[in-house]
Structures are given as structure tokens and as C-alpha cells.
Length: 327
Ligand code: HPA
Ligand code: ZN
Image 1 (tube, rainbow, N blue to C red):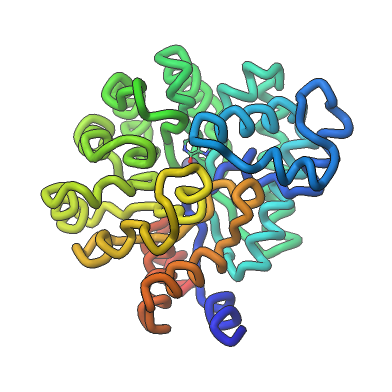
Image 2 (cartoon, rainbow, N blue to C red; image 1 turned 120 degrees about the vertical axis):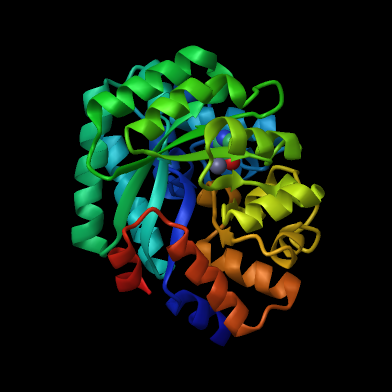
């Protein structure tokens, strides 16, 4: 318990968390009762079973079922404020939260409702929980170029307060990163940072493509970079941080256990590692828990744990002054 309190108190940021995947269990149960057609169990034990993922594709199908129950601004605001409350309990006062506008629009949510929910939630997060939130709008890669175009247009047209980055999620196998290069180029020219998922469910070539084709400034996951010494050297040398999500990788079957996670190899090669939750209630993960799990598996000393926490702040897209204020 002393170590938990130590980690809880460390200044730290959450840099990889999906808004839909941050829906608390009680929120999901409530939504499931109101939207039985989504096929999400409204019973606590059944929901726990529903959240046992056979593999990554199964995880995505479950994720999309939860997403389909979100209908308007109140649902979005509820998620945002719930996430902020969770972050405050973890001792995190800043997060960059991934939102996938194209999926919500496809599910019939008007863009204005999404934006109002985000903006109202963000104000409440700061006022009620002392948590500052920023947004990453990401492309659901499996939906192809039309999703890339619509996500870019939505981001640049609406530019809500707090939007700092542009991402790419979903499956990696069969969804090449390079096809999305024009959208990332335009987003970067408009001042958004590039943060694609890469190397979560496919090999190091995907991470190379994220770097070369999408100008990645951080890598979502980046786990498989550990298999490529030249890539490790590149990420370390250019100080391109990776957003490691250990429990997520175990729960979607990408790695057999935290002990077997290549995070040690990433650290040994000087890569800037940050620890994150991805989809916390779905994976039964908490931010503090990720630090404790990795510290336990790798036998980290308190100073090394503190270093990981500091990485999360320095790797964020906050201004230099805001980073200094957090640390
Ligand atoms: N990877 C890709 N897509 C996702 C994820 C993830 O970790 N979480 C939610 N959508
Ligand atoms: Zn993710």
C-alpha cells in the first residue's frame, strides 16, 4: 500500500485513453438498460463476462457495441466527467483523450451534440475535478479513406477548444498506415500533433510507417518496436515516446503477461516510455495500477517509477510552462 500511495501522488498524465473505452461499469450498465438493442448485458456479472476478450478483433466488436449506445451530448458529457473523476482518483491532473468523431456520426449522433458534450464535459472536468483534458481526434482506420477525410474535415472545421492531436486507431492488420498520409500532412500543417496507433497488433514495419509516412510524434502502443533494434535506436534517438498500455495488451492477447511485456526492452534501449490505460474499465485497468504492475514485473525502484511518471508529463502536448507547473 505505501507504494500505491507513492504512485498515486506522483505528478503524471494519461496520454492514451479512448473516451468510449473510459465508460465506467455503472455507466455502461445504465446505458445497456436504456438501449437493449445494442446487445450489451445490463447485469454486472454478465457484463464482466462480456468484457473477457478472446482477441483484439473481439475487443473491437465489444467496444463498438458500447459506442453504439451513445446517442447525444448528455451521454458524451457523462463519459467525460466520469473519466475526469477517475483521473483525479489516480492522481492525474491532465489527459489527452482519444475521440473518434466519425464513428459517432455513423451511429447517428449529430456533430454538434458530440462537440457540445465534449466542451461541457471538459469545463466540468476542470471545475469539479481539477483535471485538464485535451482531445485527440482519431481516424477509425478500418473504415478507410472516407473516414480519414471526414475525420480531418471535422477536426479542422470544428477545432474545439482542447483539440491538440490527430490519430489513427482500429485494427492494424490489413489497414496500412501510409494510405492516411495526406490527412496527417494536412492535420500537421494545421497545427495538430500526429499520434497514430502502431505496433499494437502488427510488427515494427507499421511503426516505421507511422514515423515516416504519418510524421508520428508519439506512438500509440509501439509494443512491437521492441523486435527491431534499428527502430528502437530511431525512437530513442529522435525522442519519439511510446504510449505503452500493458494491461490492454494482456487483455487483448497481444502479450501473455505483464512479466512478458517488452516494456523492459524498450526502456533498456533508451526509448521514452509512458504508461497508459487505453480503455480502463473494459480492461479492469487504472493508471496507478499500470505503474504498480510494471514496477512489480520489472522490479523498478521508486526513482525509476517517478521517471516514468515524469515522462508522461514531458511527452504530453502541453506548453513548456504548463509542463513545469504540473511537475
Ligand atoms: N487500438 C486500436 N483501436 C482502439 C483501441 C486500441 O487500443 N482502443 C479503442 N480503439
Ligand atoms: Zn488505443
